[in-house]
Image (cartoon, rainbow, N blue to C red; front, side, top):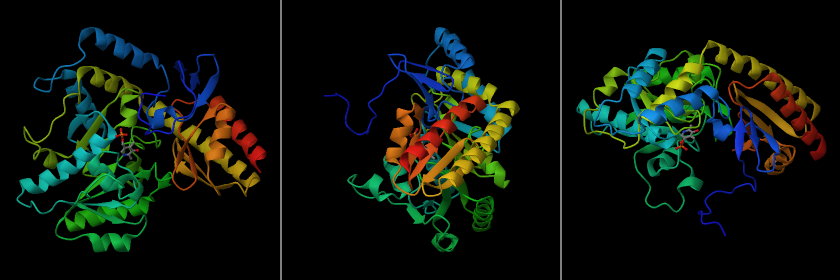
Length: 387
Ligand SMILES: *Cc1c(COP(=O)(O)O)cnc(C)c1O
C-alpha cells in the first residue's frame, strides 16, 4: 500500500523523463502530454533555457528570507509590471495562495481607508480558486467544502451568467468581485468579453474591486499575455501561478499602486515566496513569453479548434461542444468523459477532465503542428471506437 494519502485518484502510470510535448515511461513508452502538469509547463518539459536558469542560480543562491532584498524578484516584479496593468507584485508559491492574497489585498485596502466592513467578495458558484480553506469557500462548491468545518464567511455567489443576481448581491459591504477570466476546472467556460466589460463597469460604478483569477488562463495560455486583454479591461488585482513557473512552484498577485499602499510591512508574508531560485526560473519563463510564442499559441489554437470542430461534425452524437481560447481547449462530450480520456491515454495521448463532461486539452505554448496532428488522429480514432 502507498504511504501517500489517498486524496488523488491517480492513473497507474508514471514517468521518468519529459521532453517538450512528450513524457517517457521507465520502459521507454512515449506519451503526448497535452496536460503539461495542468497548464503549468508552459514551455513543455526540459526547456533548455529553464534548465540553464535553474542550474546557474542553484550554484549561486537558492533561498534567503524576505528580510533581505532579492534582486531576482525585484527584476521579475518590474518586468511583470511593465507588461501589465500592475504597479506592484507580491510573490507566492501557488495558485491558492495567490487567490487568498488577492482577497487579503482587497480587504486590507478598504480597511486602510477606514471601511473595514467592506470585506465581502462575490464569486461565481462552482468556480475554482484553489484548495485552501478560504479558497474552497470562495469557490462556492459543495463538493469541495463538504466536511471541512464551519463555512468561512465573507463570500457571496451568483450562477455563471446571472448578472441580475450579481447586481443584487452588491451592497455596501462588498469589497470585490473575483472571477476566473476563463473557468478552467469549471469546464473551460469562457466568460464573454461583453460580460467581463460589464462587470468591470459595474465594479467601477459601485466603487468595488475587480479580481481576475488568471492562475490557469494567464501568462500566454490564452494567446494574449492575460486573457482579460481580449475584453480590453483593466482589473485591480490579478492572481497568477501555474504558467509563470514553467514547472517550478511560483505564484504571485499583481495589483495597482493604490492597493499596494495598503500592504504595509507586516500585513503579509511568505517564507518561500519569491526566493532567488524561483525568481530566476520566473524570469527565464518570462524571457520566452514573447510575441513569437503568443503568435504560435494563436496559430496552433486556430488550427486545433478548427480541426476539432471537423471531428465534432463527423461525430455529432459524441462531441457536444469544442470550446476554449488559445491553448486552453475543452472538448465537451454528451456523456461522462472518463472512458474517452482512458482511451486517449491507451493511445498515448494525455488529457485531463474538467466539469460538465469536458476533456481539457492543454498543450505547451510552443507546441508544434505535427504534435497537434498526432493528437487529432488519436481523438478521431477514439471517437470511432466509442460510437
Ligand atoms: C489551479 C488554480 C488555482 C489553484 O492553484 P494551486 O497552485 O493548485 O493552489 C486557483 N485558481 C485557478 C483558476 C486555478 O486554475
